[in-house]
Image (tube, rainbow, N blue to C red; front, side, top):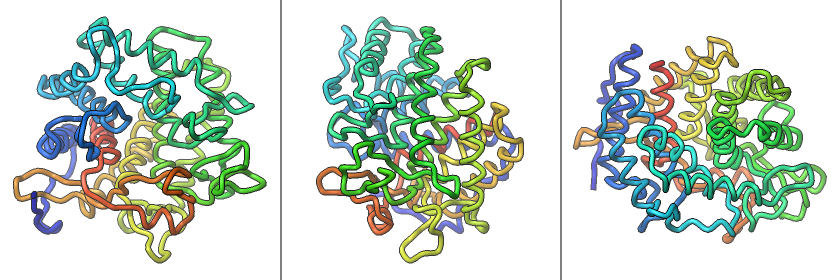
Length: 385
């Protein structure tokens, strides 16, 4: 078992553009030590096509693109070729589940296919696009999060499914898809927006779930990582959305509003955020790493895209410094680990998750969760640009 030394002994240099990229590489190489196979990154005991390893694969492809180091490309290719058969079948994937999480892998497949094209990658990409064509929807046209979560939209799904939809629409191209892509955010914004500018984790159109408010249909709280998926999704979609798309101004306004709201609940000392961001200081709440890494990425990218003010890039640098000072540790083997990551959280299911404050603060906390490590790599790459 890996052991760690005191955080106070962690020495990382002040960052220039080049050193941000060096840090991305160090985190990436550490991840390769911690999880030699990408599919292992979320504690899986056997290979499974899931949003966490496919997000990690995207991070490695983007590391290759940024550095030219083929070590990262080979690592992602090995993962892809383990899951994508020569006829394009995706190992363990089942379209009939209509699970938005399973679509996220299309992002890295499009990226990888642009670098090292294979016919089976294209077939797999089209398979994932076909799921969206048949995905169950709310009455307003929003994608259900999963077939088993009827009538529900979660912030998480805007990242896992809609970012692929946008990348595909730009790659194919499929210009008629952009209004539908924008609709996903507009429906979620209309139903989950809170008075403080943040969002409820989920919304149940039917109001039948125990966690849903009988009037609004919303879950009780804002969850840090769900808000993180949301702002990452907004940035990733805006990267591809045409400048003249009629709904673009509304999508940009959502990102600006949420980013501003996040600054009002940020911990002023560390520049990080709590597991339940707008209940800072309450018993059991803690500064959580995955959401903080996601906000770092979104702030840096939003500023690069010109959607957020330039000051958000400076804020992203401060977030990274906060993560380095308080959440990154160096192991005895020299690798870096990210601490204080919420392992998982959701709504409904079995055992039942009620979305309350008490629920979120009692979910398992672990190190090196891919939902923090991958966004942190991507954030460092963004800051190097």
